[in-house]
Length: 425
Image 1 (cartoon, rainbow, N blue to C red):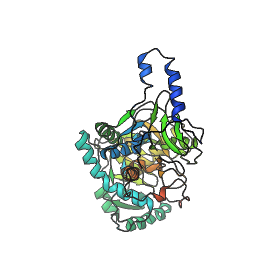
Image 2: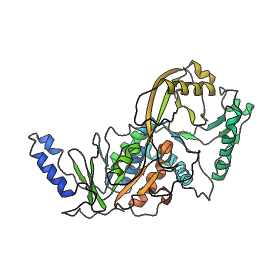
Image 3: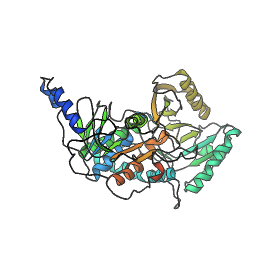
Image 4: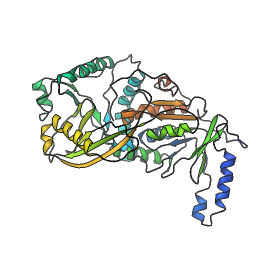
Protein backbone atom coordinates (compact mmCIF):
# COMPACT_ATOMS: atom_id res chain seq x y z
CA UNK A 1 0.00 0.00 0.00
CA UNK A 2 1.26 3.47 -0.83
CA UNK A 3 2.79 5.40 2.08
CA UNK A 4 3.35 9.07 1.35
CA UNK A 5 5.56 9.78 4.37
CA UNK A 6 9.14 10.92 3.55
CA UNK A 7 12.02 8.47 3.90
CA UNK A 8 13.70 8.49 7.28
CA UNK A 9 17.38 9.15 7.82
CA UNK A 10 20.12 6.94 9.26
CA UNK A 11 18.75 3.70 7.84
CA UNK A 12 20.42 0.35 8.28
CA UNK A 13 20.01 -2.55 5.85
CA UNK A 14 19.70 -6.16 6.99
CA UNK A 15 20.35 -7.28 3.38
CA UNK A 16 23.62 -5.41 2.93
CA UNK A 17 21.83 -3.34 0.26
CA UNK A 18 22.41 0.39 -0.11
CA UNK A 19 20.75 2.69 2.42
CA UNK A 20 19.58 6.21 1.54
CA UNK A 21 22.47 7.84 3.42
CA UNK A 22 25.08 5.65 1.75
CA UNK A 23 23.57 6.45 -1.65
CA UNK A 24 23.83 10.17 -0.93
CA UNK A 25 27.47 9.77 0.08
CA UNK A 26 28.30 7.90 -3.12
CA UNK A 27 26.46 10.46 -5.21
CA UNK A 28 28.20 13.36 -3.51
CA UNK A 29 31.61 11.79 -4.07
CA UNK A 30 30.76 11.16 -7.71
CA UNK A 31 29.60 14.75 -8.19
CA UNK A 32 32.95 16.02 -7.00
CA UNK A 33 34.61 14.18 -9.88
CA UNK A 34 32.51 15.93 -12.53
CA UNK A 35 32.97 19.42 -13.88
CA UNK A 36 30.30 19.17 -16.60
CA UNK A 37 26.94 20.52 -15.45
CA UNK A 38 25.02 17.96 -17.50
CA UNK A 39 26.81 15.12 -15.75
CA UNK A 40 26.09 16.71 -12.38
CA UNK A 41 22.44 17.17 -13.24
CA UNK A 42 21.88 13.48 -13.74
CA UNK A 43 22.89 12.87 -10.13
CA UNK A 44 20.33 15.19 -8.61
CA UNK A 45 17.52 13.57 -6.67
CA UNK A 46 14.10 14.01 -8.28
CA UNK A 47 10.83 14.47 -6.33
CA UNK A 48 9.92 11.16 -4.72
CA UNK A 49 7.26 9.30 -6.75
CA UNK A 50 4.66 7.22 -4.97
CA UNK A 51 5.56 4.17 -7.08
CA UNK A 52 8.69 3.10 -8.96
CA UNK A 53 8.26 0.43 -11.64
CA UNK A 54 11.26 -1.59 -12.81
CA UNK A 55 10.67 -2.85 -16.35
CA UNK A 56 8.97 -1.24 -19.34
CA UNK A 57 7.20 -4.12 -21.06
CA UNK A 58 3.45 -4.52 -21.37
CA UNK A 59 3.03 -5.36 -17.67
CA UNK A 60 5.00 -2.36 -16.44
CA UNK A 61 3.38 0.01 -18.93
CA UNK A 62 -0.12 -1.25 -18.15
CA UNK A 63 0.48 -0.81 -14.43
CA UNK A 64 1.96 2.66 -14.93
CA UNK A 65 -1.07 3.77 -16.93
CA UNK A 66 -3.55 2.19 -14.51
CA UNK A 67 -1.90 3.80 -11.47
CA UNK A 68 -1.63 7.19 -13.17
CA UNK A 69 -5.34 7.10 -13.94
CA UNK A 70 -5.90 6.84 -10.18
CA UNK A 71 -3.79 9.92 -9.52
CA UNK A 72 -0.69 8.03 -8.38
CA UNK A 73 2.72 9.47 -9.29
CA UNK A 74 4.88 6.91 -11.10
CA UNK A 75 8.41 6.64 -12.47
CA UNK A 76 9.31 3.72 -14.72
CA UNK A 77 12.84 2.46 -15.38
CA UNK A 78 14.05 0.19 -18.16
CA UNK A 79 17.58 -0.91 -19.00
CA UNK A 80 16.85 -0.49 -22.72
CA UNK A 81 14.13 1.23 -24.75
CA UNK A 82 10.54 1.06 -23.52
CA UNK A 83 8.47 -1.83 -24.84
CA UNK A 84 11.15 -3.61 -26.87
CA UNK A 85 11.35 -6.98 -25.10
CA UNK A 86 9.09 -10.02 -25.15
CA UNK A 87 6.01 -7.78 -25.22
CA UNK A 88 7.05 -6.38 -28.58
CA UNK A 89 8.05 -9.80 -29.92
CA UNK A 90 4.74 -11.60 -29.31
CA UNK A 91 1.83 -12.17 -31.65
CA UNK A 92 -0.78 -10.12 -29.78
CA UNK A 93 -3.32 -12.88 -29.09
CA UNK A 94 -6.18 -11.89 -26.80
CA UNK A 95 -8.36 -14.47 -25.00
CA UNK A 96 -12.06 -14.78 -25.82
CA UNK A 97 -14.66 -13.75 -23.22
CA UNK A 98 -15.23 -16.16 -20.33
CA UNK A 99 -18.94 -16.11 -19.48
CA UNK A 100 -19.08 -18.66 -16.68
CA UNK A 101 -20.23 -16.93 -13.46
CA UNK A 102 -18.49 -19.33 -11.06
CA UNK A 103 -14.84 -19.31 -12.14
CA UNK A 104 -12.43 -20.18 -9.32
CA UNK A 105 -9.12 -21.08 -10.97
CA UNK A 106 -6.72 -18.13 -10.49
CA UNK A 107 -5.43 -18.17 -14.06
CA UNK A 108 -8.96 -18.37 -15.49
CA UNK A 109 -10.04 -15.42 -13.36
CA UNK A 110 -7.14 -13.29 -14.57
CA UNK A 111 -7.74 -14.32 -18.18
CA UNK A 112 -11.48 -13.70 -17.97
CA UNK A 113 -11.01 -10.24 -16.51
CA UNK A 114 -8.43 -9.35 -19.17
CA UNK A 115 -10.74 -10.52 -21.95
CA UNK A 116 -13.41 -8.21 -20.52
CA UNK A 117 -11.04 -5.25 -20.22
CA UNK A 118 -9.29 -5.41 -23.61
CA UNK A 119 -12.02 -3.80 -25.75
CA UNK A 120 -12.59 -1.19 -23.04
CA UNK A 121 -8.89 -0.38 -22.70
CA UNK A 122 -8.45 -0.27 -26.46
CA UNK A 123 -11.14 2.38 -26.83
CA UNK A 124 -9.83 4.38 -23.88
CA UNK A 125 -6.27 4.30 -25.20
CA UNK A 126 -7.43 5.46 -28.60
CA UNK A 127 -9.43 8.29 -27.02
CA UNK A 128 -6.44 9.41 -24.93
CA UNK A 129 -3.70 9.05 -27.55
CA UNK A 130 -5.26 8.71 -31.01
CA UNK A 131 -3.39 5.41 -31.43
CA UNK A 132 -5.38 2.42 -32.68
CA UNK A 133 -3.81 -0.63 -30.99
CA UNK A 134 -5.31 -2.93 -33.61
CA UNK A 135 -7.76 -4.72 -31.32
CA UNK A 136 -9.82 -6.95 -33.61
CA UNK A 137 -12.15 -9.87 -32.95
CA UNK A 138 -10.74 -12.13 -35.64
CA UNK A 139 -12.14 -15.43 -34.48
CA UNK A 140 -9.95 -18.52 -34.41
CA UNK A 141 -9.67 -22.14 -35.44
CA UNK A 142 -7.95 -24.73 -33.24
CA UNK A 143 -6.98 -27.74 -35.33
CA UNK A 144 -5.50 -31.22 -35.04
CA UNK A 145 -3.52 -32.53 -37.98
CA UNK A 146 -3.16 -36.10 -36.74
CA UNK A 147 -5.42 -38.45 -34.75
CA UNK A 148 -2.87 -38.58 -31.91
CA UNK A 149 -3.39 -34.84 -31.38
CA UNK A 150 -7.17 -35.11 -31.02
CA UNK A 151 -7.40 -36.14 -27.32
CA UNK A 152 -5.51 -33.05 -26.16
CA UNK A 153 -7.65 -30.80 -28.35
CA UNK A 154 -10.86 -32.47 -27.23
CA UNK A 155 -9.86 -32.02 -23.60
CA UNK A 156 -9.76 -28.28 -24.22
CA UNK A 157 -13.46 -28.27 -25.06
CA UNK A 158 -14.30 -29.29 -21.51
CA UNK A 159 -12.36 -26.32 -20.19
CA UNK A 160 -13.92 -23.96 -22.72
CA UNK A 161 -17.38 -25.17 -21.73
CA UNK A 162 -16.62 -24.80 -18.02
CA UNK A 163 -15.23 -21.30 -18.59
CA UNK A 164 -18.16 -20.18 -20.73
CA UNK A 165 -16.12 -19.72 -23.92
CA UNK A 166 -18.09 -20.00 -27.16
CA UNK A 167 -16.92 -22.71 -29.58
CA UNK A 168 -18.24 -25.11 -32.17
CA UNK A 169 -17.00 -28.32 -33.77
CA UNK A 170 -16.14 -27.72 -37.43
CA UNK A 171 -16.62 -30.22 -40.26
CA UNK A 172 -15.08 -30.06 -43.74
CA UNK A 173 -17.87 -27.96 -45.23
CA UNK A 174 -17.91 -25.46 -42.38
CA UNK A 175 -14.11 -25.22 -42.45
CA UNK A 176 -14.17 -24.19 -46.11
CA UNK A 177 -16.77 -21.56 -45.33
CA UNK A 178 -14.71 -20.13 -42.49
CA UNK A 179 -11.19 -20.45 -43.90
CA UNK A 180 -11.10 -21.47 -47.58
CA UNK A 181 -7.33 -22.00 -47.68
CA UNK A 182 -7.07 -24.10 -44.52
CA UNK A 183 -5.56 -27.51 -45.18
CA UNK A 184 -8.06 -30.23 -45.99
CA UNK A 185 -5.88 -32.68 -44.03
CA UNK A 186 -7.03 -31.68 -40.54
CA UNK A 187 -8.56 -34.44 -38.44
CA UNK A 188 -10.51 -32.25 -36.02
CA UNK A 189 -11.14 -28.51 -35.73
CA UNK A 190 -13.00 -26.13 -33.44
CA UNK A 191 -14.09 -22.58 -34.18
CA UNK A 192 -13.85 -19.93 -31.46
CA UNK A 193 -15.65 -16.89 -32.89
CA UNK A 194 -14.58 -14.43 -30.18
CA UNK A 195 -10.83 -14.97 -30.22
CA UNK A 196 -9.14 -11.60 -30.74
CA UNK A 197 -5.81 -9.92 -31.42
CA UNK A 198 -3.99 -6.63 -31.03
CA UNK A 199 -0.88 -5.18 -32.65
CA UNK A 200 1.75 -5.39 -29.93
CA UNK A 201 3.95 -2.44 -30.97
CA UNK A 202 0.94 -0.15 -31.36
CA UNK A 203 -0.48 -1.21 -28.01
CA UNK A 204 2.84 -0.56 -26.28
CA UNK A 205 3.13 2.87 -27.91
CA UNK A 206 -0.42 3.72 -26.85
CA UNK A 207 0.23 2.66 -23.25
CA UNK A 208 3.43 4.68 -23.06
CA UNK A 209 1.82 7.76 -24.60
CA UNK A 210 -1.24 7.54 -22.34
CA UNK A 211 0.90 7.10 -19.24
CA UNK A 212 3.18 9.98 -20.23
CA UNK A 213 0.16 12.21 -20.81
CA UNK A 214 -0.85 11.50 -17.22
CA UNK A 215 2.53 12.41 -15.79
CA UNK A 216 4.44 9.13 -15.69
CA UNK A 217 8.18 9.73 -16.01
CA UNK A 218 10.22 7.28 -18.09
CA UNK A 219 13.91 6.50 -17.65
CA UNK A 220 15.35 4.53 -20.58
CA UNK A 221 18.78 2.89 -20.63
CA UNK A 222 18.72 3.08 -16.82
CA UNK A 223 19.40 -0.36 -15.36
CA UNK A 224 18.63 -0.76 -11.67
CA UNK A 225 21.74 -1.71 -9.70
CA UNK A 226 20.48 -1.99 -6.12
CA UNK A 227 17.44 -1.68 -3.91
CA UNK A 228 17.61 0.93 -1.16
CA UNK A 229 16.52 -0.83 2.02
CA UNK A 230 15.53 0.08 5.57
CA UNK A 231 15.65 -3.21 7.44
CA UNK A 232 12.81 -5.21 5.83
CA UNK A 233 11.31 -2.36 3.80
CA UNK A 234 12.23 -1.08 0.36
CA UNK A 235 12.85 2.67 0.13
CA UNK A 236 13.95 3.12 -3.47
CA UNK A 237 16.39 2.04 -6.18
CA UNK A 238 19.76 3.11 -7.51
CA UNK A 239 21.11 3.25 -11.05
CA UNK A 240 24.68 3.97 -12.12
CA UNK A 241 24.28 7.69 -11.40
CA UNK A 242 20.79 8.29 -10.08
CA UNK A 243 19.23 7.53 -6.72
CA UNK A 244 15.44 7.45 -6.57
CA UNK A 245 13.42 7.07 -3.41
CA UNK A 246 9.97 5.58 -3.13
CA UNK A 247 8.33 3.39 -0.54
CA UNK A 248 6.63 1.28 -3.23
CA UNK A 249 8.69 -0.49 -5.89
CA UNK A 250 7.25 -2.95 -8.42
CA UNK A 251 9.46 -5.35 -10.39
CA UNK A 252 7.96 -6.03 -13.84
CA UNK A 253 11.19 -6.95 -15.61
CA UNK A 254 10.04 -10.14 -17.30
CA UNK A 255 12.62 -12.90 -17.54
CA UNK A 256 15.15 -10.68 -15.75
CA UNK A 257 12.94 -10.25 -12.66
CA UNK A 258 14.34 -13.20 -10.72
CA UNK A 259 17.77 -11.58 -10.81
CA UNK A 260 16.46 -8.57 -8.87
CA UNK A 261 14.88 -10.68 -6.16
CA UNK A 262 18.08 -12.69 -5.74
CA UNK A 263 19.70 -9.51 -4.41
CA UNK A 264 17.37 -9.78 -1.41
CA UNK A 265 17.77 -13.51 -0.94
CA UNK A 266 14.29 -14.18 -2.37
CA UNK A 267 13.92 -17.15 -4.71
CA UNK A 268 11.62 -16.36 -7.64
CA UNK A 269 12.69 -18.33 -10.73
CA UNK A 270 11.89 -16.57 -14.01
CA UNK A 271 14.00 -18.55 -16.43
CA UNK A 272 13.85 -17.20 -19.99
CA UNK A 273 11.79 -19.16 -22.50
CA UNK A 274 13.00 -18.10 -25.92
CA UNK A 275 10.43 -17.81 -28.69
CA UNK A 276 11.25 -17.26 -32.36
CA UNK A 277 8.73 -16.03 -34.93
CA UNK A 278 8.45 -15.42 -38.66
CA UNK A 279 6.62 -12.70 -40.57
CA UNK A 280 5.33 -13.97 -43.91
CA UNK A 281 4.16 -12.03 -46.95
CA UNK A 282 1.90 -14.22 -49.13
CA UNK A 283 1.45 -11.42 -51.66
CA UNK A 284 -2.30 -11.41 -51.13
CA UNK A 285 -4.75 -11.89 -48.28
CA UNK A 286 -4.80 -15.58 -47.45
CA UNK A 287 -6.19 -15.84 -43.91
CA UNK A 288 -9.26 -14.53 -42.13
CA UNK A 289 -8.97 -16.13 -38.71
CA UNK A 290 -6.26 -16.94 -36.19
CA UNK A 291 -5.24 -20.58 -36.59
CA UNK A 292 -3.74 -22.54 -33.72
CA UNK A 293 -2.15 -25.96 -33.79
CA UNK A 294 -0.75 -27.30 -30.52
CA UNK A 295 1.71 -24.59 -29.37
CA UNK A 296 2.03 -22.88 -32.76
CA UNK A 297 -0.21 -20.34 -34.44
CA UNK A 298 -0.79 -18.21 -37.51
CA UNK A 299 -2.09 -14.68 -37.03
CA UNK A 300 -3.41 -12.69 -40.02
CA UNK A 301 -2.84 -8.94 -40.08
CA UNK A 302 -5.08 -6.41 -41.79
CA UNK A 303 -2.58 -5.71 -44.55
CA UNK A 304 -2.33 -9.40 -45.51
CA UNK A 305 0.87 -10.33 -43.68
CA UNK A 306 0.88 -13.46 -41.50
CA UNK A 307 2.73 -14.05 -38.23
CA UNK A 308 3.94 -17.61 -37.67
CA UNK A 309 4.99 -18.53 -34.15
CA UNK A 310 6.39 -19.59 -31.90
CA UNK A 311 9.14 -21.83 -30.66
CA UNK A 312 9.82 -22.65 -27.00
CA UNK A 313 13.53 -22.92 -26.29
CA UNK A 314 15.38 -23.21 -22.98
CA UNK A 315 18.70 -21.72 -24.13
CA UNK A 316 19.15 -18.87 -21.65
CA UNK A 317 19.39 -15.41 -23.21
CA UNK A 318 20.84 -16.61 -26.51
CA UNK A 319 19.52 -14.10 -29.07
CA UNK A 320 20.66 -15.98 -32.17
CA UNK A 321 18.06 -16.65 -34.88
CA UNK A 322 18.31 -20.25 -36.00
CA UNK A 323 17.66 -22.13 -39.21
CA UNK A 324 16.04 -24.90 -37.17
CA UNK A 325 13.40 -22.52 -35.81
CA UNK A 326 12.82 -21.10 -39.28
CA UNK A 327 12.30 -24.62 -40.65
CA UNK A 328 9.92 -25.62 -37.85
CA UNK A 329 7.77 -22.52 -38.22
CA UNK A 330 7.77 -22.70 -42.00
CA UNK A 331 6.65 -26.34 -41.83
CA UNK A 332 3.86 -25.41 -39.40
CA UNK A 333 2.67 -22.56 -41.60
CA UNK A 334 2.62 -24.53 -44.82
CA UNK A 335 1.06 -27.60 -43.16
CA UNK A 336 -1.84 -25.50 -41.90
CA UNK A 337 -2.20 -23.34 -45.01
CA UNK A 338 -0.47 -24.91 -48.05
CA UNK A 339 -0.89 -21.66 -50.00
CA UNK A 340 1.76 -20.11 -47.70
CA UNK A 341 4.42 -22.19 -49.47
CA UNK A 342 4.52 -19.31 -51.96
CA UNK A 343 4.99 -16.66 -49.26
CA UNK A 344 8.19 -14.75 -48.60
CA UNK A 345 9.80 -14.70 -45.17
CA UNK A 346 10.36 -11.01 -44.62
CA UNK A 347 11.49 -11.13 -41.01
CA UNK A 348 12.56 -13.45 -38.20
CA UNK A 349 12.98 -12.39 -34.56
CA UNK A 350 12.91 -13.68 -31.02
CA UNK A 351 11.92 -12.68 -27.49
CA UNK A 352 12.37 -14.10 -24.00
CA UNK A 353 9.21 -14.96 -22.08
CA UNK A 354 9.50 -15.05 -18.29
CA UNK A 355 8.94 -18.50 -16.83
CA UNK A 356 7.74 -19.30 -13.33
CA UNK A 357 7.81 -22.31 -11.04
CA UNK A 358 4.44 -23.50 -12.39
CA UNK A 359 1.80 -22.34 -14.87
CA UNK A 360 0.97 -19.10 -13.01
CA UNK A 361 2.64 -15.70 -12.84
CA UNK A 362 3.98 -14.08 -9.66
CA UNK A 363 1.80 -11.18 -8.51
CA UNK A 364 1.66 -9.18 -5.30
CA UNK A 365 3.84 -8.02 -2.44
CA UNK A 366 7.06 -9.91 -1.73
CA UNK A 367 6.74 -11.75 1.55
CA UNK A 368 9.04 -10.24 4.16
CA UNK A 369 9.94 -7.11 2.14
CA UNK A 370 7.51 -4.27 2.82
CA UNK A 371 6.70 -2.11 -0.18
CA UNK A 372 8.26 -4.43 -2.80
CA UNK A 373 5.84 -5.92 -5.32
CA UNK A 374 6.26 -8.17 -8.36
CA UNK A 375 4.30 -8.80 -11.54
CA UNK A 376 6.13 -11.27 -13.74
CA UNK A 377 6.36 -14.92 -14.79
CA UNK A 378 3.42 -14.78 -17.22
CA UNK A 379 5.21 -17.10 -19.67
CA UNK A 380 3.37 -17.03 -23.02
CA UNK A 381 0.48 -14.97 -21.67
CA UNK A 382 1.99 -11.66 -20.60
CA UNK A 383 0.20 -9.52 -23.13
CA UNK A 384 -3.09 -11.39 -22.90
CA UNK A 385 -3.18 -11.14 -19.08
CA UNK A 386 -1.78 -7.63 -18.75
CA UNK A 387 -4.99 -5.58 -18.21
CA UNK A 388 -6.23 -7.64 -15.26
CA UNK A 389 -2.72 -7.94 -13.87
CA UNK A 390 -2.34 -4.17 -13.86
CA UNK A 391 -5.83 -3.50 -12.52
CA UNK A 392 -5.66 -5.94 -9.62
CA UNK A 393 -2.11 -5.05 -8.61
CA UNK A 394 -3.00 -1.35 -8.74
CA UNK A 395 -5.93 -2.17 -6.46
CA UNK A 396 -3.59 -3.74 -3.91
CA UNK A 397 -1.02 -0.93 -4.14
CA UNK A 398 -3.65 1.76 -3.62
CA UNK A 399 -5.34 -0.08 -0.76
CA UNK A 400 -8.43 -1.30 -2.62
CA UNK A 401 -9.89 -4.82 -2.72
CA UNK A 402 -8.42 -6.44 -5.85
CA UNK A 403 -10.81 -7.28 -8.68
CA UNK A 404 -8.97 -10.62 -8.97
CA UNK A 405 -7.74 -12.20 -5.75
CA UNK A 406 -3.95 -12.51 -5.98
CA UNK A 407 -3.40 -15.12 -3.27
CA UNK A 408 -2.91 -17.84 -5.89
CA UNK A 409 -0.01 -15.89 -7.41
CA UNK A 410 2.15 -15.38 -4.33
CA UNK A 411 5.86 -16.04 -4.74
CA UNK A 412 5.84 -18.44 -1.78
CA UNK A 413 2.84 -20.49 -3.00
CA UNK A 414 2.99 -24.22 -3.50
CA UNK A 415 3.54 -24.95 -7.22
CA UNK A 416 0.27 -25.38 -9.10
CA UNK A 417 -0.44 -28.52 -11.10
CA UNK A 418 0.96 -28.49 -14.63
CA UNK A 419 -1.54 -27.47 -17.31
CA UNK A 420 -1.45 -27.16 -21.07
CA UNK A 421 -3.98 -24.39 -21.68
CA UNK A 422 -1.79 -21.33 -21.26
CA UNK A 423 -3.07 -18.49 -23.42
CA UNK A 424 -0.56 -17.40 -26.00
CA UNK A 425 0.51 -13.79 -26.49
